[in-house]
Image 1 (cartoon, rainbow, N blue to C red):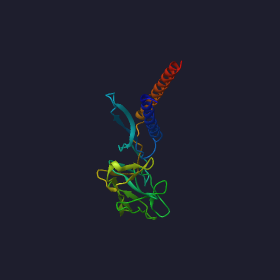
Image 2: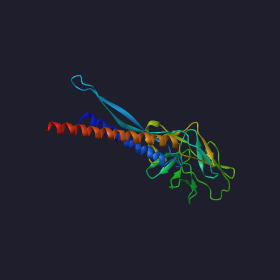
Image 3: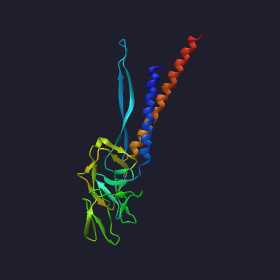
Image 4: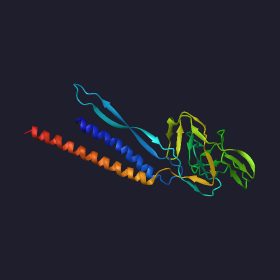
Length: 238
């Protein structure tokens, strides 16, 4: 296969990855705390011999996460929490602590606040957050201070990755911070609210159409190149 064919195939691989990412963004438009994902392309340029034009090929080199604010929806839920501004909740999972913006919590049988998957929410000291079983009114201040019946119990932590470039998506709502976490600044906690996905539906659907058309155009170019080579071989074989 000539260079043109390799270049087109390489482009299609990247477009297919981007298509999968955009489709996943669209599928999570209504997922609480979901962060939109993107793809970064890089270009590889190779100098050819004998003064021939250089060979340039693009490849999908890394995924990015958009940490922009999602829409806030008032639910009135006593244990529904949203973050306005920067920061993440810290969640304890079997695979280690994880960061998330999804703040739908409920007390488990032990009185600990947990996610819908049963993972425990951690306070600013990385300890589980406990709600007394006899608590009648639970309030959570903007700085995360947790009180039950006007008695302070602790402070829910707001954290940020120590190195944002090392933030790795664990799943749609949780992230792994390989370089560790540190207290976040500039964020405020809202009780009775949930933060939605930060996916812009119109922008993502538009991008989906653009990527599909680009993939189809690449496939058409590949078919034309294949037909050209076959025609040359048939002519030379006569």
